[in-house]
Image (cartoon, rainbow, N blue to C red):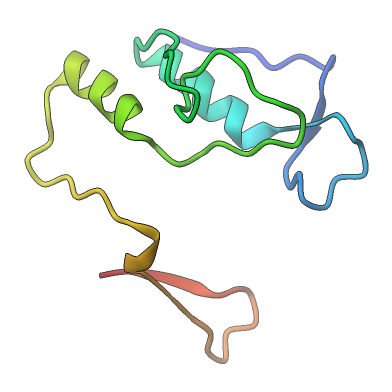
Length: 105
């Protein structure tokens, strides 16, 4: 399958720095649409990526339990999957000036 993003939205790669009040997070919408390509429908769970709406300047890219359950219902569970909490992420900055690196424990 495929999906289409039109020019009617004020797309933003970084809604935190976007000038438009009605900026729409491109990654959030793309993640949602990829869910449809995978076969997922809309979810009633408001925190889910597959919830049918997104507020301007809202960012939703982290899979929630409902998103994971939907994919697993279609494709089966991954026995090696681990759902990391934010506390499990360690940020480290070194001599690399590009950005911090994230390591999962």
